[in-house]
Amino acid sequence: MKIKVQVIPRSSRNAVERLKEKEYKVWVTAPPVGGKANEAVIQLLAWEFDVPKSSVSLISGHTSKNKTFEIN
Figure 1 (cartoon, rainbow, N blue to C red):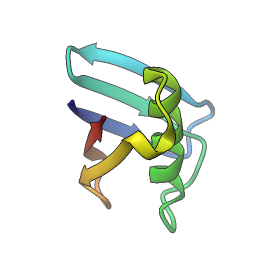
Figure 2: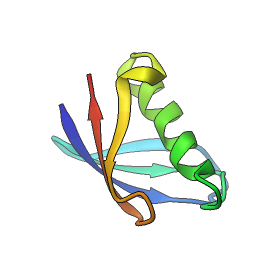
Figure 3: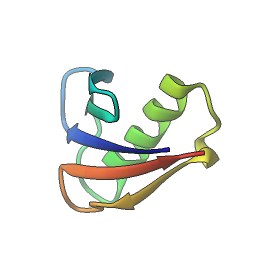
Figure 4: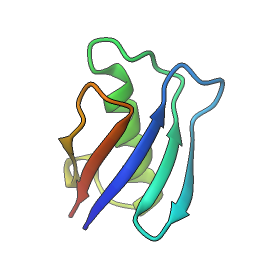
């Protein structure tokens, strides 16, 4: 399943909010430096969908706030 995610880095909380069927907004406390925010988003999505981290992969938007993830 592919989902679209809007990421808010350097937030005061870690949270996931479902906006539409396959669209989410994710807040992470990690900064967008060195892939730290991307890794934090992967962790949160794995927890949200109850899958291992290895089942969540970033497909596009590595340096953008709008990203596409695939969850197996």
